[in-house]
Length: 126
Image 1 (spheres, rainbow, N blue to C red):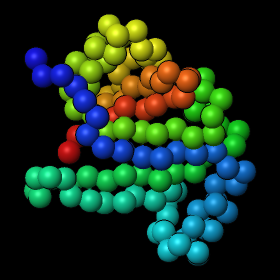
Image 2 (cartoon, rainbow, N blue to C red):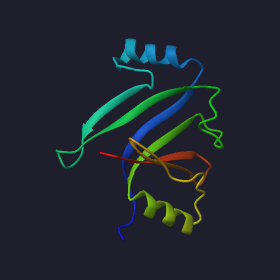
Image 3 (spheres, rainbow, N blue to C red):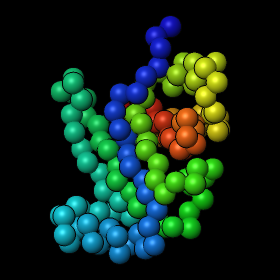
């Protein structure tokens, strides 16, 4: 079976005092076109027929979504072969925080790195 791996960065999520004002600041000063989730940066994969995107998303500083990490950010990594990757991570002693969840836009699971930073793994349906 093919081993799972990271294929890119799926998103950058971070805490801030006022996500609406933060999105407006980035739109005004850096030209980032934002929506309710943040901003989506589209790009092409090595195979030009395949498109992907990276999401930039500010969260309220009161969010619990980044817990149990005490950090104010979380990186989302695009992965392939999610089930295999998660099984390998568990066998390697990596803390897997939840079960794989499937949605119309892909599969997700959360892990902790060596220093307790929460990472989101995402296998997109693209």
